[in-house]
Image 1 (cartoon, rainbow, N blue to C red):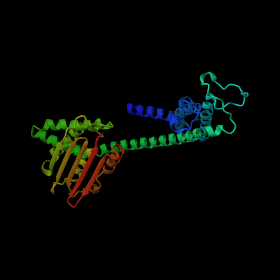
Image 2: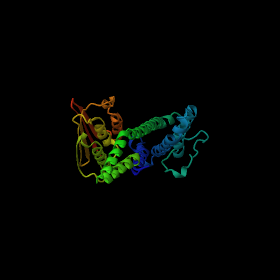
Image 3: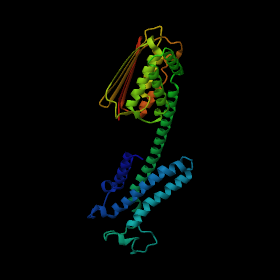
Image 4: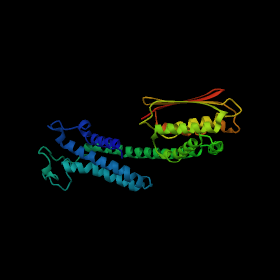
Amino acid sequence: MTQKEIIFHSSAIIAFVFLPVLLYPHPPEAENVFLAAPTIRDFIGNALMMIFFYINYYYFIPKVYLNKQYFVYAGILVFFLFLICWLPSIITGRFVPNNFSEGALPPFPHRLPQHFTPKPSEGSFIMEVKHHIFVYGIVILFSILLHTRNRLLKAENEKLQAELFNLKAQIHPHFLFNTLNSIYALAIRKDDKTADTIIQLSEFMRYLLKDVNQNLVSLEKEITYIENYIDLQKTRLRRSVTIEYVCSGNFSSKQIAPLLLFNYIENAFKHGVNPEENSKIRINISLVNQLLSLEVTNNIVTQQNNESSLYIGMPNTEERLNLLYPQKYFLNIKKTEATYTVLLQIQLL
């Protein structure tokens, strides 16, 4: 549990336990509302409900409710209902069991101020604890809904992780083979770029196989990875395409989910290059304050397969954006007869 989560849970517990002071009715004759018997009773009741909430969330729901043991779960709920309603009233003397004779002291009288007087149970007990019953029902419903929501988010995250794995697998195999062939050609010519190209390919593969498994990566490393990819494409494609790449901003100390930017750049190379046509790719990456912008434009060229119109990976990337940066990104894809342009802006955390 992170520090933020600990602070959030602690604040929620304190606020809920002290809720009786603000919302619940108190006897007008009580000089100190904190020492009034109904307030003490409600403090204890709310504390018991918070204990039940966490036990229910972490144990009863996954172990009993989700295993379809509904009768057992119902019995547990009834038991805790009686516990939450009766125990605080007995401790504070607001409810006297039948086995106490008239005038007998309630349990633990030495812990209570003198103005704590036992209340008869006939007729008034249900009225005194009806708000506990109502809040208890809300606690049950909220814990089930929260657990269901978190399960759905976990399943969605696992789905996106699987899609990320598939996205890595979609890096075109021909790119690797053609890059190796280009490196081989450089080596035959004893070109000075051979060693640098091998290092770039090595860093590219290391990032792809290792770093992208993290939830967040350094933005500076992500940009370096993209630049290595672009340089490798320049080596592989040579004069087949005109590449314009501009990058500006201070990327240090910033983080981003891996492969979000790369997917749109990779698609430009996949579907915007044809040696027999005018192939041009423009890539612009900038960071102003916390706003990261990516603009990729490629010419629409003829492809030898139907894959050119699919732009594989785009829906997967948009799903990841919705989950990881909700309400904090802007995506605009514009297609004309000649060009295909992607504009992505992300408000980094």
